[in-house]
Image (cartoon, rainbow, N blue to C red; front, side, top):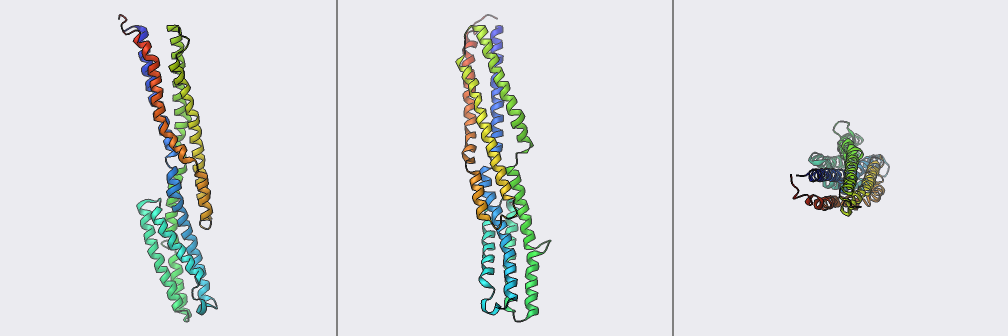
Length: 310
């Protein structure tokens, strides 16, 4: 094998190897950013908002139950529509949270247990109403109901708080960039594509000098194709910014009372991330095209030395 042919074979091998590593790294880095867009929009957001709404509704229901049972209109109005509406909201929110929880099997089981405890809490409040004419019994039942709701260790609200913390932990994982992605986007991807660009430019200079041809259109096209990494990096940055913004919106303390507004804000923030995530599907095709351009650009020059003497 002649020296020129050996050099070209080595350069082709190096170009294809670097192309494979660079494209694979880019695909993994892009997928790492965009993989959680659907999970944040479709699962984490509703689950977190439903649990927050249940917490707020249970707080409100207990306050309204106390006012109803100790007020002067208890015999006429009973526990009142406000109490029953808040309790109904809590039950509906819990039912939805069970379906969409992001905390896995453990969180789902906790929510099912909490749903049963809310039913027991409601029964105690009803017993307080039944015994409304006996101040001692009424207050005792109401105290039991309040304790079941607010105990620090195993109360309903404490259990919901644990579920909520688990959901927020999952959300932070879904919306954070992380050290590995930071290294990939700031070091690996730029280094690999810069190395590939330098190799392509040096190869074209060698071919121009060795074969006396002004340009190699296939290698020029391959070099130009590398520019596609710039919009992909921009898409990844925009997606991460939107994920982080959604995460901040869902970490606010008032999301239970403004669930509808927060849901709309998150939906508006995440709008556009799905098609950006879909752009990652073009990376393997772009990589295959890049490899094909390199192969077509170099293989004819290698073939010119196929029958050269050793």
